[in-house]
Length: 181
Image 1 (cartoon, one colour):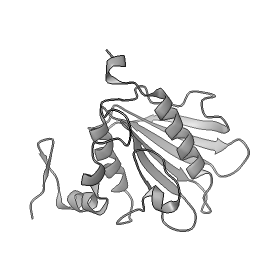
Image 2 (cartoon, rainbow, N blue to C red):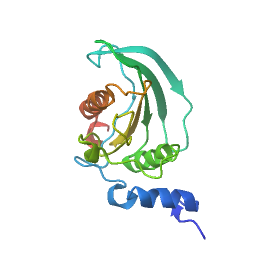
Image 3 (cartoon, rainbow, N blue to C red):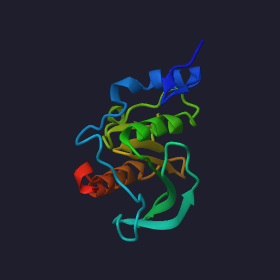
Image 4 (cartoon, rainbow, N blue to C red):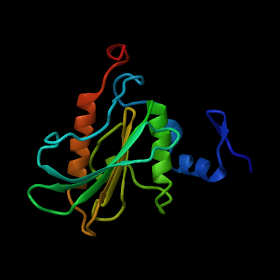
């Protein structure tokens, strides 16, 4: 079996199967709204930007080929509850963000995570969540940013709420191509 190509590179058969499981060709490179060239730069959560959330830790992580910046946060709801770990991946483009989303879902041992719409909420251009009664995980891409959120507690926490808050933050920070000139 031979792999397909992406950007001149040969993809391995496993990555091809993951893309097929997630119906990648249905959403790859296309945001739900707005310009595919719009993007967010300097991805980070500044103090006070996420109302109701306390930042316990922030860490810059190494980037991979399709990423410009990766930042991990440990956040907790100010009203109490489980800590959440969120990683934001800033990519050069929507297409790179969607490829990065595939990279992230490949790290989970589940053959296919359900779409967030199937779990009863919507965030991002494309979103996947954990299966099971509690939402322990949300992965989504909005424009050129990928967000991964995990609960530190087995009963879950405010994962969906944080996903909505981060999605809103990203949407409010994006710039159209002509604004970057």
